[in-house]
Amino acid sequence: MAVQQWETLKEAIVAYTGLSPATFFTALALVFAIYYVVSGLFGSSPDHNRHQHRHIEEEELPPLRPPVQLGEITEEELKAYDGSDPAKPLLMAIKAQIYDVSQSRMFYGPGGPYALFAGKDASRALAKMSFEEKDLTGDISGLGPFELEALQDWEYKFSEKYVKVGTVKSNVPVSETESTGEPSESTPRDVDAAKPAENGPSETAAVKSDENVDVNKD
Picture 1 (cartoon, rainbow, N blue to C red):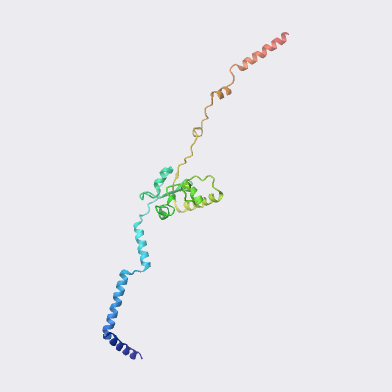
Picture 2: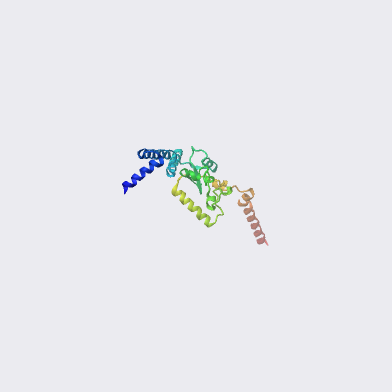
């Protein structure tokens, strides 16, 4: 049965192509070989392309530097670490505590969804989940209990994931009395009121003694 089918196939090849069976199968094999070569050059699989693209991205990203401790800096100094300078670490503060978020540059770096938080103490914005410019501050006064709880969660996540590298210097002014620990100067009127009268008691005693003498004489 198989031999009969093979003979029929050979006759069909000769009848329709004019080629011998050996020549026909050689040409067919050559066509398949050319197809696989071309598809390998221009038709890479999606998974292969994705892997190659990821590999290129990893090569373009600079290696992360170890966090550097900055100590206490001002809010103005913190702005220099917003990611605009690739030579500097990417920093962000929560409740005056500064964290190095360089490992999450895709989120907090330029072009990232949370880039506006970088280089700032964004405590209020995180507590309110706000992206408004007025909330990009470390002032958390007036927040409700739910907002403060949300801020606490953010602080916990940052302390677990990122390295703390410094603190933001407070801008709250300190009065001269509190800073020196010395009492403020009293006014002349207060000094006069506090100082005992120099002649008062003696003159009063003298008047009283004279009155007693007069009474005894009478």
